[in-house]
Length: 631
Image (cartoon, rainbow, N blue to C red; front, side, top):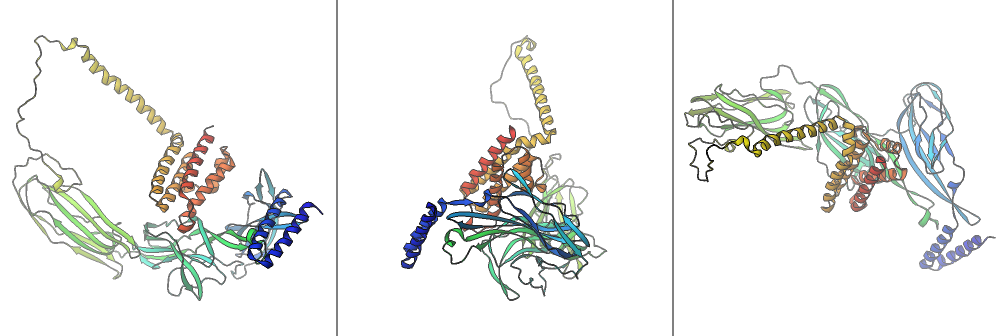
């Protein structure tokens, strides 16, 4: 019997005795037992690496099934084989587990990492998927190939429950049995007119212990004009009964969308990865306090698409229609009914209501031909809410009559489409009369466009005021061309002009090389954003802090790697940095900071990471990457 075995048995007997006597003894015995086990700890990772692939041997056309890869070590960079006739629906969903084995007093930790993909068969036949590969340390390992027999269509049944994402219409179907977490795209209506606003709500339903949300992908809303609705940060989930089942629910985001064409239009699905905490280990065992506990699983969640029917606006559109869809009012006002020639007068046209005020054009106004009229200044007061888009737009025209007389401005007409009545409505203002008398204001002092009358000042002209300062006299016969300073005043501007031309040409050359400019400015721009994040940190504005840190990282990676932000993701950024010689440990630190910031945008305040730590790690990671890439 070895010394470790004897020590293990003695401590185990001591622990069992103390458990029967008191809680304190149990705790002390457990602590000593763990200390002994740690001394004899041995990891199974030192043994042979096993990487296995598994799938159902048969499936049907159109049926979904799971392709699972199991690795007995911590791996990275898993690469799938050519999937051929199979369509990848989601994945990978990654889960890991650890177990402990004690043999002859030696404790061995067994690690198991599982990668799960959801596939769908598209054609009948027998297919073989080649080996997948994964990196463990500095080595790559391959899995076994798998063979799958695909039979004819089995009435569209699926081997897996789909992720539901239902529309908010009467009679909305309940989620499939056993579905513990899903997302819905909820629209306040499914049939609208072109240009009519639709409120879209992204709502989460969960029965699980949700710890975070990552890799959020919102629909692109093509064929729509999209406006965000301010949505409070999701901190807690509300209880809601769905078809007799209790779920925790919360609003992730709301939008207002305005269809820009008619016909059947589909809103793409919303996608995300849900981080879920689940208990592992044996319940009631002495080892639960130390080796049991919880693990975090990544579950891909995808809503269903939403189909909308968009009706075209009726033909025979009336005069004065500028694209307004909703319910509006018109107000026209002039600041003075009597003025002088060459004096500014303001005409204000205000459109108010709800619908799409931010998308319609301004009404046409027939001004007298002797009026000089400038482009209007525009003031918008528009808000987006679950009631839709509402507010007002004011156009202020600056008019300058050049001739005296009595003038008439015809009524201003504005037409819009009312989706409730399904017809066009026309609003008309009163006729405006303006009396212009001759004034002493001279013509030729043009006003500045976009200013009200009180901002316009005409500067009078008169005889210059008598000079009160000293007068310089020069002696007769003075020759200015014999003065060196005269030549200096001529040569100095020429020299400055030459310097400016050289500097400007260099700037033009640098700007022409967009890649070099972006690469050179990457750290500077990241520093500015981190400086803004630092101010948010001092103000304890957590949400804005994490959003600004995310902008700093993604902006830096986009400029440094010369990849547009729209085409950049964590996997691509990681592989590009590794190719440029950045150490894997440094890349992992950067990806961890990004992941923590994304998690913090949706996590409850109690579980947010420290802002100081995130800020310091961000500055350090960007500085170190900058040094590595410059080498």
